[in-house]
Image (cartoon, rainbow, N blue to C red; front, side, top):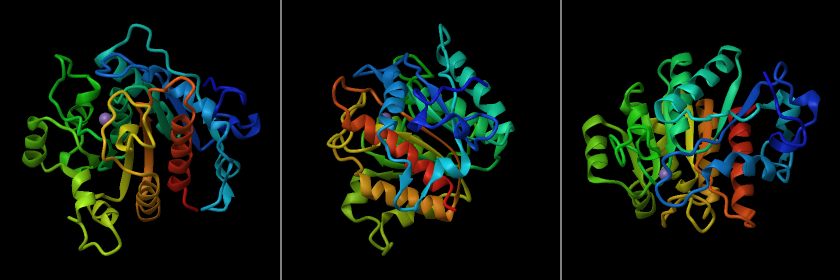
Length: 300
Ligand SMILES: [Mn+2]
C-alpha cells in the first residue's frame, strides 16, 4: 500500500507513526470532480485539506492526547480516477476502500464530490451490516438523478438509499431541496433534521439540545458522511453550493462528540471542499474537522 511521506501526509506525521501496516486509521484522498453544478474546484479539496492539516495541532485539548501517537494515521496516495466517471468512479472508490476494511483499518475518505461517498458507504455497509448513516449536508442529495446523471453529487444519498435502509439514514442541516426529495423522505422514512427546525425550537423537548434527537435516531454503529456545505457559509464559504442558515462549529462538535461517546463511529468521509485561492481559514476548518472526527471515533 503506497502511503504519502511526512511532508505530504495528513498532519505531517513522522514515518514511524504513519506506516500502513501499523496504523489503525487510513486517510484516503479521492479528488473526484465530474458533476459539480455551481462553483467548481472540489478536485483540489483533498490536497488543500492535507496541506492545511500541517497547521492543525497533534494535541487535542478536549481528549488530552495526541491521537496519532496512540493509533497511527497513514495517508494513502491519492486515488487516480483518470477517465473513470460516474458508476466506474464509485466502483473505484468501493474497490479501494473494501480491502482496507478487510485489513481492519478505520477509513476516512477525503473528497472530492459527494459521489465518492457512495463507494465508501457501500464498502462499509458490506463490512458492517446494519450501519446507520449520519449525513451532514445543506442538501438531502436524494434526487433520483440530476441533469441526467444518476451519479451526480446531488443524487449521492438516493444511490446510498438503494443499499442502506432509508430509515437508518439521518440527515442534519438540510435547507435546500427539490419537492421530489421532500416526498422521498416522507415516503421512505428518512430521518431529516432541517436547519430551520433545529433553529426554530422543534426539538426543545430534548432538554439537552437538538443533538439528542439526532442521537435517538441513530443505531449503534455509525458512518459519517460530511458535506462541508452543511456548515454556514460564514465559516465555510469554500463549497460549490453554499447555502445560508447552516451549522456552526461548536454545535457540530457537540453532536460529533456525543456520537463518538454514545455510538460506535466505524468510518467517515469529508467531501466537497472547493478551496478559494489564498483563503486559508476554510481549508484549516476542514482539516481540523477531519482530525476531530478521528478523535471522536476513538474516544478512549
Ligand atoms: Mn451539499
